[in-house]
Image (cartoon, rainbow, N blue to C red; front, side):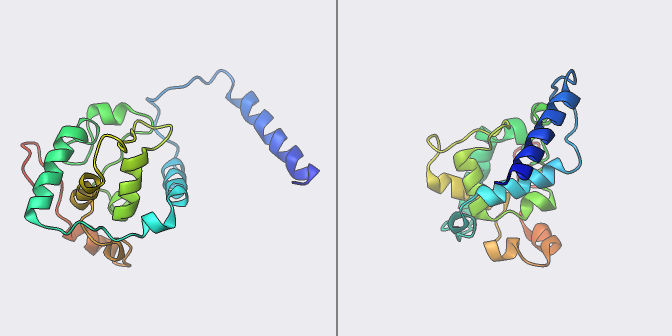
Length: 176
């Protein structure tokens, strides 16, 4: 690294420290407009490509979706809500638990979802479920969240892929 680049980096760090002094920390503030996009890009960058692009070995079926929805209700709904749109607890986290029905979340591949469930997301409320949940359960869970294949999740017609996916659970634990 050149001395100029190192000097600029140090200057930016010092300026950030000076400008942020006394601002305090709060999980109540809304993320800045670029934060979600930067975070999603960082997650995609950090996910090994072999996992992110892997096909889901669990085939879609009514039994798989039923089991995944029951698992969701037991482990995920506390923050993400049964309908995937979040709960007061999930919205109070910083950053807030994502809306699992949004196009951005639905556009994630099964492998990316698996990796996030397996390893968690540092500096957020998303825990790593790696040792607590069998791999097959995590892949079933990704079927309930984004049951399309990797190719459909990455298709140019993301709106159609989003619309064609079965939703998560409604307030009465019934698919809506």
